Length: 181
Image 1 (cartoon, rainbow, N blue to C red):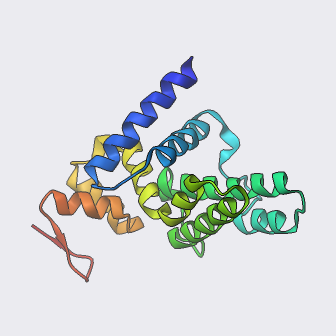
Image 2 (cartoon, rainbow, N blue to C red):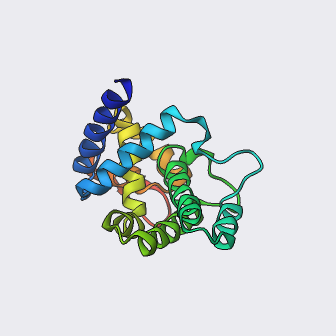
């Protein structure tokens, strides 16, 4: 029963986050994102292991000839990518930046669509950046009006969520990464 209550909580927070950011999320994607958030909160292994990379998962998926196993690997790439960008953007650094995870996740969800012809996977592939921001907003609803935290988040991750909230709060961000009221 905890899983059901937690999933309902995530569904509500995803909807609120999308509304606050003026982003659209369809019901299939909203349900999928809630499942990903639920899995990330209950299953410690959803994120990558210390010696595991997205590129290695992608190679394993590419070399796998069993459709179900290949689909599982591709889905994991998308899920790990959206969790890294949406739930743990502060853990992204170095060569593997935010764009890398968004590109890999989008490509993986796109291939999942090719296998299953599920519109949810197509939607995830096409809107992964917005959906990552929605997840981040759902996770961090308590900082939506804290200007300093939002600016620090934007400065360190270039999060569209933080940029949109700062603008909604009356701040503009100019091209030199400075802000003004």
